[in-house]
Length: 326
Image (cartoon, rainbow, N blue to C red; front, side, top):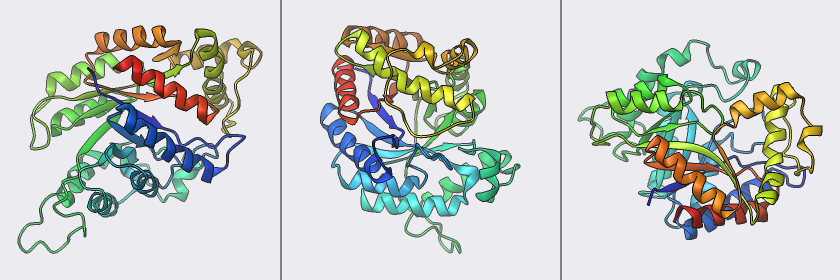
């Protein structure tokens, strides 16, 4: 059985405030643990009213405190926004609190727009230092050397496992060179998925953390009791992506009956490209779609986004997905 995990957007909806979104994420993780999901990740996004996970390490602590076994982590931290030592301190602390359960996925993108990048004090050249920053962060999480003058306390010696995230071939090259697991963001940028996986596997160099390649593939899955109901629920995500192209990011909207009345033909085509790695349907469609994706990509793991407006319908979707994966 291929392991399956969750990437939760911690969505703030038109019916739920930020506190509700955070509590819903924790509740989902409690259920996911029981349904056999391997890990539960949240991502760093800034200046987005509809996503409540900007303070990623704080959110991870909230979720980990409500669960017992499931791995919890960042998918990911946008490393060029931060000093590696600070990230080591945050995630080393989490590892001390929840030993053996913390993942640290690292991305190179800003997780926001250029104006917000200025508020984050992020330099446009920071991304060029990404490989060096990964190694520096890894060193802070490693055992401290005798006489080492600068340590990330209490992170030294925690060996929090690192992942490299990517939506292009760049991350695949970094992950392969450093011998780290690789997660591809095909849930919103599927175009280079197969090329990136090929590069990662062909160039992988074994490391202390990982002996052989481990590739996780992102996929949108909206599951319901019937295909028609799933298509209806999926309009929430389709509207969210349409609004990205309109420059009108906002709160998550309830599903609508006629998505064709919401977007233009050009917007429909743009959204279809971004959501190309999606499975929408009833149990049989989900089972067949997941099996086909695993067959095409040889994925070692799937990480699922089920972006549904109503929390109870989202829980049902993830329950059906777990049944299909099992």
